Length: 354
Ligand code: ATP
Image (cartoon, rainbow, N blue to C red; front, side, top):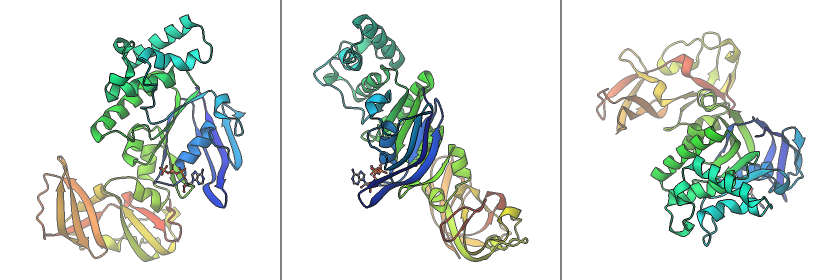
């Protein structure tokens, strides 16, 4: 088990900066997600944490020891690549034993450890089967077994479920999380899938163009996005944005949107210039008395809820409502926004005004 701390870590490839100076801490036993779009620098960050890439500057601590310049082999960690990387000519037991035997561990101890891991992963009955004929799920469990058998301080996983189809992916995500809860080892996990990050992570770092945009618990990131980028990247359908030019004063000009005055928290008052209001689809309410109106363009049925797309004076807006709410295409509906749920971003860097 390990705490991993990144302090002003930066990575350049020639003239290109892949990771800007970044700092965050992975606490002991956390399931920690590095999330962001393709090319944002999450794999490079993971590789530096694991010792597969050296930082250009900054420090990396594992349990307080500075390891930034140490190779992966000296960090007592395990790296799980796409999980199908097994030795096809060996059986399950040999695949899992291999990392221990190659360290010179006595055979009796190896046997006990492998059986222990097989119990955790529920693969006791297939230990003597060749890996070639196994189902995808069993192969994945064997690959995990090979990583956990060494009892490393931490696990590093780079899109381990990336190659799987949607249904199996969800199942393996649940298994991985359950496995983590059983063995409690610090895990750092790269994904570009915001839903996967929200479902599995204790904490999430959201990256964009080599910059850490936010670092926090899934709910904090969802409810209190630090930047417009994070607000847009997390949540499906995405947050609605309304750009306006104005000033937030004590009276709250903000929400001419719903035709009402809004109490803006004092910390936000005084902000002026180009601002953006963010509203999550589930925070839009329908109200006959509201002067702010939208025309229904489309509805998407999702079981208990539906997504309603509306044309408003500020462009297209998506609202999430109960499926029991009857709406017709073309209908004009009054919309209301609860001020407590709005996020306001300044216009230049898109920082949230909290
Ligand atoms: P993806 O999900 O596509 O892998 P990522 O967020 O993991 O994206 P990285 O793989 O960390 O992104 O790459 C970040 C940037 O650094 C990319 O623009 C990539 O082209 C660049 N990069 C990564 N490794 C190298 C390298 N060895 N040499 C030069 N550029 C690199």
